[in-house]
Image (cartoon, each protein chain N blue to C red):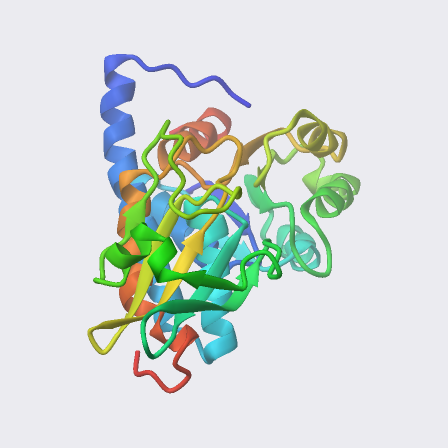
Amino acid sequence: MPKKVLLVDDSTTTLMMEEMILKQKTAYECVTAKDGLDAISRAVVEAPDLVLMDVVMPRMNGFEACKRMRLESTLRETPIILVTTRGEEEYVEAGFQSGCNDYITKPIDSFELVTLLHSYLGE
Amino acid sequence: MSNISDSPADLKGRSSSNDIGSQAKVYAARMRLQSAIDQADALDAIREIAANLIGTEEVAVFKVDKKRSELWLYWSFGVDPNKHSVLEVSREPKLKQVLSGKSVYRLKLSNENLLSTDDPVSALVPIVVDGSPSAVIVLFRLFPHKPGIEPVDREICEVLSHCAGRAIEPYHAR
């Protein structure tokens, strides 16, 4: 069975790009969500193998969604990678404190993205 | 963040991945602009593409006046609108080139700014409507971790140039 990745972003442009890269370069199955709240409910239902999530989103941001996912028993161990526009130390630290495993900065580099996902999910 | 090595195999993989990545970015930009439902959505598409695909959260659109001597600020995001309300073509040599329909990019490591402002300008992109530049998208400061405008960014800017007409002309056909 292919590994499942939950892509979370309020930008349809980003979701489209991420999905296209993963479909062309990996065998992962992609499911999507448009904000943090949506992401939590999708994650509970879909049980993804990894979550790739934007930070700045309406209704609930990526940090908060990450914290709440860690409270769900089924998602406690799921790798969560946050997508940020900033690589500053403070911002990254906030991400790790929310429970994420890793981060990647926008604009996304496709090689970096695929390599990072492979490191968590295998090829 | 995980370390990524650059062995020959990795470099080959990087090249292949980046081709796919470039195609994905250009495709996503085109689809987003073409599916914009109205003018406000088209302007939001410009903001989204600038932030998520190119790497800047400082962007403005200037409309060209009828005499083509001035450009008036039409919309902006992340920049002080009072600071950039009007651009005079006679005082901005790069704008003449842009008004001929060609985008202008700041070269990596170059100290030369594209406009006479203390805010760094990374790109000037004409919005071409019916074959003529009707407006100019100004991309200001890039994210700190982004070294400069890359070849794929130029491709995305070409998409912006030819598909963003709806952002300034509400009834422009897609």
